[in-house]
Length: 125
Image (cartoon, rainbow, N blue to C red; front, side, top):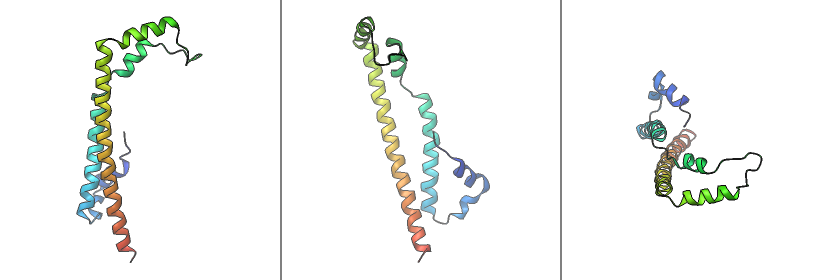
């Protein structure tokens, strides 16, 4: 999901100790720990919505916007099934989890930038 090369290098070389601000260290560790954990969660908890949709609507690369009358009728029948409703519910739940995660990650990133900017401003005085 994310690029953790710099973080991995900070940890493996012991250079994390060069960051003197403990709050910043905590924010960085939390950010990357959550990033790696959520990457695993995403691999496990994907919805089957796209698989379902692709099964009922064959994609024609020559006519991507065309759906035959037969395919339209078949799709409408599929949309009325419990399986479709379950897939929609799962997709909405999955999307909500992703939104919640991204909001938390955005806040962690904002905190880290704020702390870095504060340190840079102190250093430049």
